[in-house]
Length: 244
Ligand SMILES: C[S@@+](CC[C@H](N)C(=O)[O-])C[C@H]1O[C@@H](n2cnc3c(N)ncnc32)[C@H](O)[C@@H]1O
Image (cartoon, rainbow, N blue to C red; front, side, top):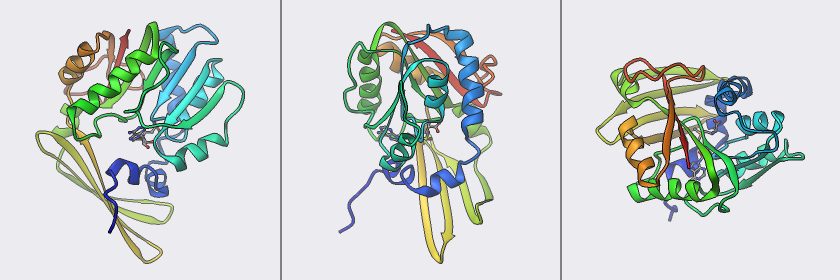
């Protein structure tokens, strides 16, 4: 019998996720982290964790800026790939964000590019934020970079076809009151595949509640990787900076 694997464990661990999202690269990550550092002004040697780091594109940038950087992700394949870049003050490990992280350890914990809102239970969201809160040193920062659900939903439903590395991805996006969905269909080497991304339809006020529950203080909200002001009708991203 096929084991019931959670969608995010399967899709993000497959090579096809990285084919489809290849434009989300180190250059985009570098520009964003540079902007972020103008706001956060961390001292050299600060300890940074990127939780749900993927192949480590943001972690690489934190390390280049002189921070002691750790990247963690559930996907074994992504961490194997990230480890190829491992060096002094840059290490990667497999970790489920619902599991405990070392406490009072980090100056900054990041959760970037819609790496939140995957779980079935609200308690699991709370658990992730509780873990992050405990892992931060006093006055440490959390950065969450999520989609702006208000703008995303205004433009749904949507269908598109995208060809990457010779694979034609047929994509359908839609939403309901709880989730935003992306169905992805393609054929590779004669085999048909289908995956579904299912992200909770979280607004800024949902994050506010979740963060306040853990006693985070929200310091900034931005609406793009250039750190423009957040506008729920116009912004592409919802980027929250909160302090322990
Ligand atoms: C949209 S990708 C973003 C990856 C990376 N932050 C980036 O910007 O390229 C979401 C990431 O979350 C990771 N992820 C999903 N569920 C996770 C979990 N329970 N614990 C840790 N990482 C998880 C996935 O493996 C994937 O790498």
